[in-house]
Length: 453
Image (cartoon, rainbow, N blue to C red; front, side, top):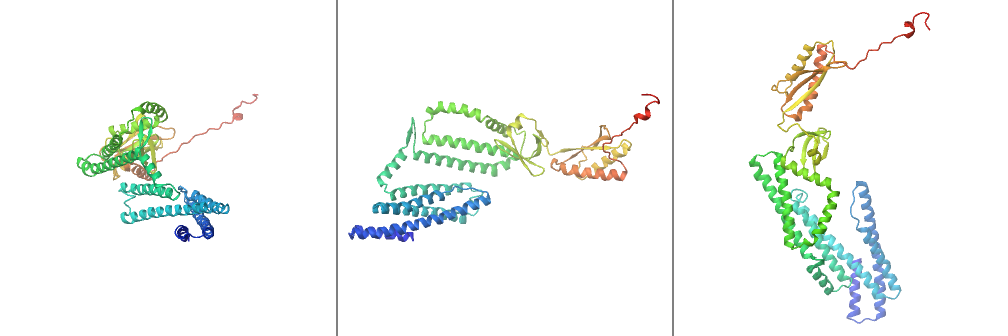
């Protein structure tokens, strides 16, 4: 129906320009157009507000949030729908028509651009499937670039609808092309596009080189996972730095005049981000020296688990209960870290066991050795051993020491050994004591001599 109003507006303009219709007739037709167009514009704003409310309810339910463009747009539509009739009542029919028709045309242009953007997104999903969200990350920039160019086109067309001349638009484009000066530094739209294009091209080449090195070169060198991660990560950061430097050189920016400001900012940022910088440097040290590698079992800061990922800021550790602990790299460099698999996956298991004082210690020692020897995952070499760990308050403290080929199964083996020890001790009649206290109660009256006070 709004489209019909726009078509009727074209007819009125034709009658006014070509047929030289009477001004009274034109005014009557214009009032009808303004009334119907304002009513339809108000109704469309109401429908869009319903959609905005439904989206906010969905976001509240799903606990997600998105930018809300509908609410300010509907407010402008309602203002235009009220302003056009008021201007017409004041006697400015032509101005009222311009306000209403320009608003409707702007909405039509914006809606068409939005339709093109969403249709392109749907088409890319159909053509590429999950490639956009998967390994082909370069395709993720396509919707962004399309939205950028559509936004520029909409701005130009909307400006023309509201009466901006093509000469003014050309002057604005020329200003963007020549650039804006900030002191001795000139930045233009073309320079920004050049910088973005060169940097994105360098980023794409870097990702391509990383993939080639990771897939074709490193497997032939037979290096471990930690070394592969260090090499691939180093190539990535080197590529990003080179891409930025080449992009700046391609633009031709002279940043020498900003050296003093950059130096002052670096001092302030250094104080504020010193922990971030410390973690970054620590991450580089970890990637170069590799005292800790991905897949290692470490104990640090009260946490124990596998090293899942080493980045330049933090290290991700996956614990036994599948929790992921993020430890800053500075703690791994400055603190004490126990790497249980640094020299290999061989793992040692210590099982403290207490027996009663009146138990047969030789029999208990034999059972402990047999339990460890008979377990399938306990290594024969080094030989399992039982050590006397001390004389406790309530028990003789022994310690069973044995080794497994893979430290990752150490927790499960430890549990199985404990269960088997309890069962074998019960069969042998060996008591595993618990803390006890002997209390002696004395009667002070019975011990007091007769006749004493």
